[in-house]
Image (cartoon, rainbow, N blue to C red; front, side):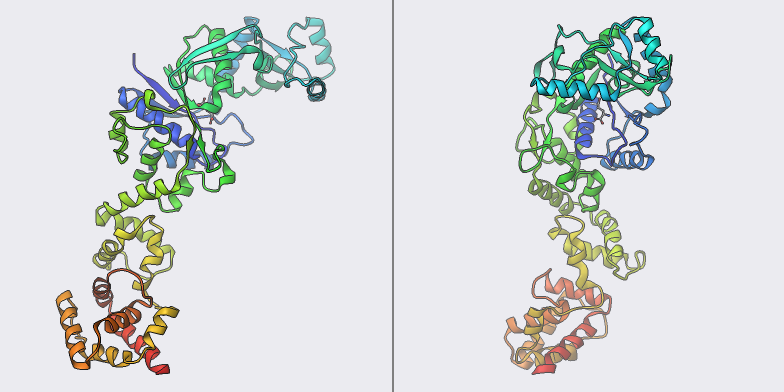
Amino acid sequence: MTIRVRIAPSPTGNLHIGTARTAVFNWLFARRHQGQFILRIEDTDLERSRPEYTQNILEGLTWLGLNWDEGPIFQSKRLDLYRQATQTLLDKGLAYRCYTSEAELEEMREAQKLRGEAPRYDNRHRNLTSEQQTAFEAEGRSAVIRFKIDDERELSWHDLVRDTVTWQASDLGGDMVIARAAERDSVGQPLYNLAVVVDDIEMNITHVIRGEDHIANTAKQILLYEAFGAAVPEFAHTPLILNQEGRKLSKRDGVTSISDFRQMGYVPEALVNYMTLLGWSPPEAEKERFTLAEAATEFGFERVNKAGAKFDWAKLDWLNSQYLHEMPIPQLTDLLIPYWQSAGYEFEPLQDRAWLEQLSSLIGPSLVRLTDAVAMSKLFFNPIEFDAEATAQLQQTAVVAALEGVLANLDAQPLTAERVQEMIKQVLKAQNLKKGLLMRSLRAALMGEMNGPDLVQSWLLLNQQGLDRPRLEQGLAVSSKDS
Ligand code: GLU
């Protein structure tokens, strides 16, 4: 049997981290078993679905490296299939037209609330006579289609994550709506549970892997499989992703979509690695860094937790920094260029390529996220600003002499590390200065701040762009102003 799994996002928002993590588990399971991973876009909710969200979802999955074998299959193109399936259930007597109005439903719920009962549909139109139906239609009422749920049933399945899950049919809220309201004799827009089951049967899905928030849907869907006389697939309900307070991560927590993480400067290799660890632990617990392909050789539901997975920003940052620190410099440079460009720094991507790569290798080891590069590289682009600490340093006594000494020694030709060391020695000797003072003054003048990357390396980079002499002169101006 070929394993076939699917990810079935609804394009009612950008690709959410929870959906993406479910996609990761589906992908890993498919790859582990040489199976197929199918992408289905559940866009039957016409009011809330948007093509730009579909675009965002496809881009996000692609960016993460979660390639799919079939699809995207759009539910909106398959409405006839769902209508036929609904008709089949009507013909078999397993579904019926329900004419209960919104106001009647509301009244029913109010009464249930007063009695301290859970809200449910009381199945009042399950056995209407054709005269009653005709009368409702004559009133101009439209009908939803409801699927009969036998309250006496107990539903039980073996879940690959949660072992045996049992659900009482009486807790499913009464006969369920499978298609929205429509005029006489027609079937309206299909609803989630129906469309999912029709598709999962038609697409030969063998394993339904999705978030545990769908458990109650699974109970309903099992009834639909039975009604269609189809084999019930295996189910794996994966733990939810929780915020710091232990509640389901939601829009209120700020960043939740994959495109947000991308914008924040996370790289896909780190993000998928982190998402894999949200609920799964590799057999060698200490080996926390791996590619998707590596994880696929070991992935199984026996190592997926039942408990929710707390989102840990520090760990994601740590993983991201590891990937950035080990990334080949040309690749890192390609990733950083757009950040420098959007910060408004002036450079020529092609002409300055060698210099940009040197800059990447200088700041690379300090990056946690790609966005950090903006602040870290600022001093390598014009114009410079001397911060308060650097200004104070420049205004110390003897700094004028130190900077003048350096300027007098600065050659016209490009600097090397050896030449810099030699020059420092010369100036120290000629001006009789303390080394600390000279080095701090150089840092203040060249970089405008007292902390930052290696001084000599930074100087060499500035020298290549012809920025060191003007900076030393500017620094000197700051120094001589008040001394
Ligand atoms: N469209 C559903 C969702 O986005 C799919 C759930 C399922 O996998 O069946 O949650």
